[in-house]
Image (spheres, rainbow, N blue to C red):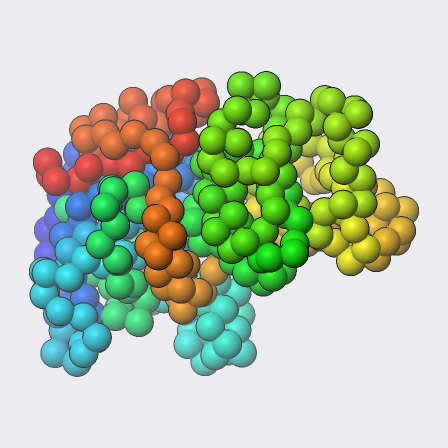
Length: 347
């Protein structure tokens, strides 16, 4: 085992502190890389607060991990020393269930291993995330990171990017399709850019007047205040797909009415309380309320290449890792536009 510096919490709701964790020695199929940047996601905060089921401490968050290869196992053929790489949410799965065989590792029937606070199938115990100096991962879960001009802000693509790309691709967003984006935050601002790059007509629904102009700046064809009854009424039955990024409680039925026949509202946010759905709105128009959860490894690589081709990265701030507690506090109170990325290079 190898000692590695990291920022982690020793107990629920405790501030993150500098600590030493252990990474495994390289196996023949492993890639080791120095972490350059790691995005901060709301799920990091939820895990630190014990809100997504049981959290295991010490807990080192971070699953939008971008770095440069420093060592390779003897059997690794597809990576080279010095290459830019990324690791997102998934670092292991059973590899043989139908989901894994179809490239849907996120739905592994035996349980996927996540990049932090997940079951470590190799070393035992639980995985430590990207708020650290280095990472070790099996090569088939490591991604080739294109040389984005704004490299740090490409890190959030590894979770936020694939979270919205996967449903847009699955529900075939593209030319001739009218896509709605509900909410314009860390997920929504990327959904706008990706949907437009796919060729779709894009409408943003927001409860914030301040977000209307920003939605149009990001490329949306229009932005509608959800409180504007006339504007909402004018779009009834017009949309093929709505990506629902809202993580707070909200009235989803108002958006089901915006769908055309066979349209779907796809939930990618995670409200704490159940959503109340009108069966009548589903039945009329053969509409659906669906969900989507990140994406598999091959699709995540496809997303990275697509975003590089179209110049898409997240918007936000890059902060030194020593300011991680300040960043988490700001995230909790909503003082963010739109993502935080930690610069790990001072570790």
